[in-house]
Image (cartoon, rainbow, N blue to C red; front, side, top):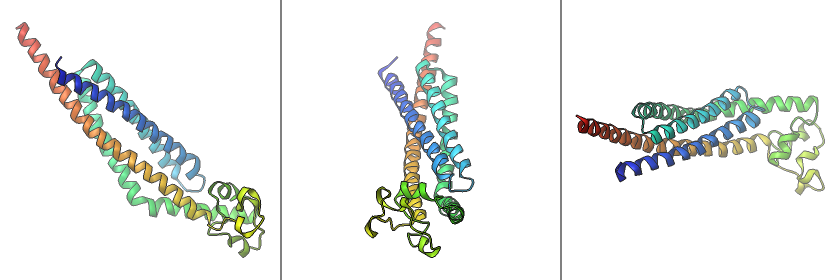
Length: 226
């Protein structure tokens, strides 16, 4: 085995290890999406499940790619190449959905979700308490929401649950705070996806190079025996 082939093999193994790490990051983001976003959004559990599924598929393909590289199996390398190509197309589709559907889809669902929470707050105070404490916010739009409905400010609207003065009250509404928080997480998702796509493109090139090298070596071995 020549040095070039060895280098390609080691680089492919390293890249697939990186795929595993990034794939697990996507699984973690999908779990976050299910736990936090679906509690106020409508139908976002589907998106969270798809993200988790994508992360799991990436990990499986990465492990398969490691085995294919270690065993230098031509058929496995070819299957790996096809899987990588399909994976890149899937991730581009995900990125397109996130880029074009976030404002109208997710944000629209968040609006509906917070409207439902506010209706629950009117019936039974405390529906927004979790988000107010977590995001340091007050009401849906701002702290004045409670004045409109003639409800006293809940402790969750204040720093350390102590409404000692007007300075200790969170003025920003929970809806805008949640959208900003989600946007930051979606940005991280986009960055991870683009890193994966770039890395997978490099990995596909290395896998193709290793496949050609293995086939050439096989032909040379056969010609020697002939």
